[in-house]
Length: 163
Image 1 (cartoon, rainbow, N blue to C red):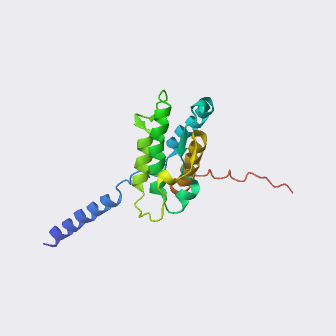
Image 2 (image 1 turned 60 degrees about the vertical axis):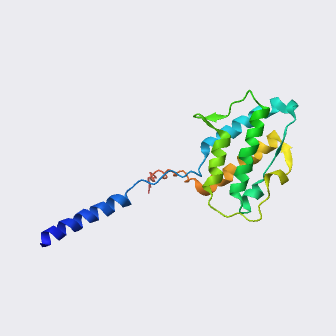
Image 3 (image 1 turned 30 degrees about the vertical axis):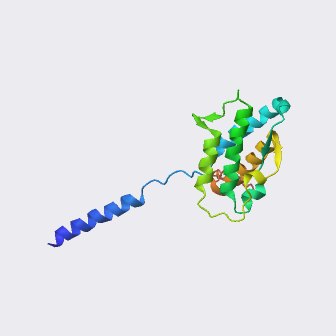
């Protein structure tokens, strides 16, 4: 009788260990590829100054003031406007449009946001300023949520002492 219980306990223990070893999903708030997309767009903006489009532009302070979700929702909505202005530019990353990635980021923050400004109440800025602010906010977020790269250990001390 004890053998049956012992076997059952071992099976349960193995099951618990397997659950603990389950791989964790990748951090969805780490967005190195999105930063590269935005920086690529920034290089395109000087060629398109003649469009003169203005976009509601969140600031890094909007993100920092406990409003990350509304900040990214605004960036996503305004990227759609920018895409309409720049019809010839397709902003994709593996088939996913940049505005969809920004919307997903907005949804990733499960926070109640009180006192956050609506997008339409933000200052209108040039596309270059808009993209620069977006890049800055993404970098700030990455510094919070991306794992820091492991630093290589320093080489062993090969110093030879002579008398």
